[in-house]
Picture (cartoon, rainbow, N blue to C red):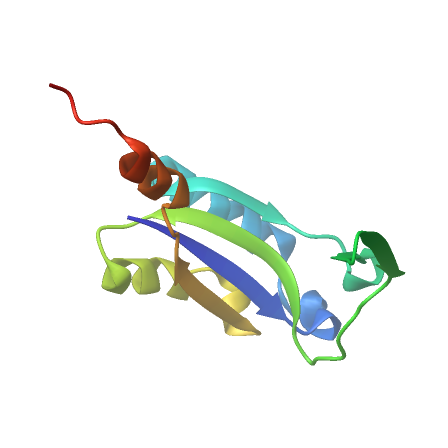
Length: 121
């Protein structure tokens, strides 16, 4: 099953987390075959929020919400179950200074395809 591990942390604590630790973990989880994709994000100060309301696009520069922890990156992983996903997420280095939100991926494409499939005669 696929899970998305969203990495949240207070950007003020980034200096407590050596980049080398993150790169080493990324290399290890990719080698294990569990990692489908991963990326670190630039500072929340570089964020742009886009909304579409009543046919009009609204763009807001910079951080939208004032929170202590910001989205800093993600890992898309493959795990047998939630317990294995949690074990993998616990090893993500930013978990030491922030938090990791683990969410199952909703197989929307597969669900729609199955619903629209025509039974073979």
